[in-house]
Length: 79
Image (tube, rainbow, N blue to C red; front, side):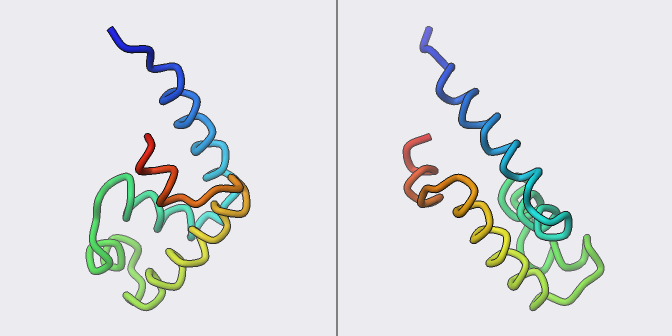
């Protein structure tokens, strides 16, 4: 059995960081990356334009990068 301590720690750290992201940005990030919805599906779920989803995604990811102090793409590849 492998040790999942690192993965659990990463998930807890990500959850704590997400709580610091503005609510609408957080909602977009959760729908897009945790639920796997497309831009169009996220826009429909949040009753907002697709452009808003794109802007909120970019801003939310920027905020997460600042909070976590890492490149999220690099981190995702490791986890």
